[in-house]
Length: 407
Image 1 (cartoon, helix red, strand yellow):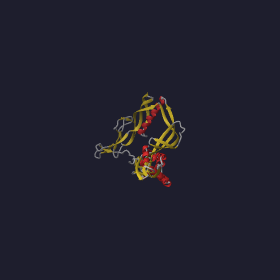
Image 2 (cartoon, one colour):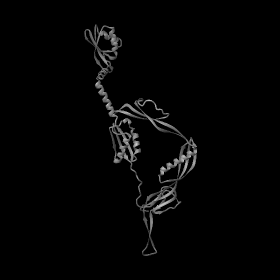
Image 3 (cartoon, one colour):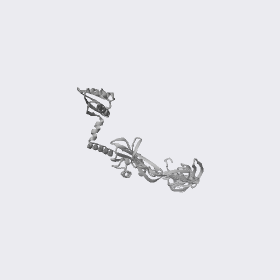
Image 4 (spheres, helix red, strand yellow):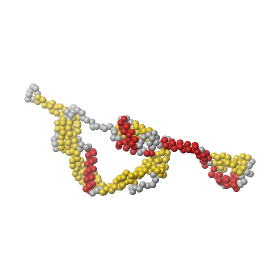
């Protein structure tokens, strides 16, 4: 008979049957559904054969019914290997501790690298911020924010950084940064005029060099020369005192031309608004996740919060360089309050005007001054107030323009 496939996984035993006509014992086993293979006659009253480990209780039942002696000689398969393995307690303990040590070493940070051509002071700032975030050699990987969140926090906290990339490579965190270079507007050197950048009505003029080409209350279009850098120098002719000689001189025009400009802006403000407010009370829970199943390992029970905001971070457990199909899930439960805010139409209009002015001020810069606002049209649609605004601004509209050799 052939050896049954998979018998080594479940385990099998070679038995020796002693008695009169021992082959009949194996025939009885086969009749009762016991798989037997590799049967050999060892002597006139002795036969041997292999049986599966799960069939041993049936073998013993058959033996009790018949007058045969059974001896177990060989034990093969994984169950017996595991049994011999776990009987060596010192070896088992050492093996388990070695696995736990490797897991521990594979899930802490060993090195933090900062690359890129960055000044030393910026590198020191990055290191200080990373330490504040808890990112340093010896830190648990599970307690660290994901790389994308670290990138966002670094760019927010270090204004000198234009971009920073964070990558986790095994037990090493690699950061590559790019310094933010403030590009100043190119200053026009040499002879130049001052021209208008947008249409407006001149309100004030401060000219330190050059010849003004406009007056107060003049309306100008973009490109109009406001201050000319071309001067006419008048000199007397030595040969004839009555004659004058004119000579053009070009200089870099300097000054500020403050004009009244205007902008039309659309803005929408809801009459009713809900928003979440975190109170600062929070609890943390930790889970071990395997695929879609997770069970808690720390932080049992539910917090006594009426409304809860959940924020979860998942970190894979590593074994050397491989990610195991087991995750550590950290869930932060924060108490939140749902604030309902309702405003009247007049309050919505004022909020819309304020929002429009703040957005325009941010766009124009701190030197511009918003002098007046007017609501051209207002309507209510779907619980929202829609405004069409006209804002008047006083700002410097002068821009340097070089004077070409042909001028």
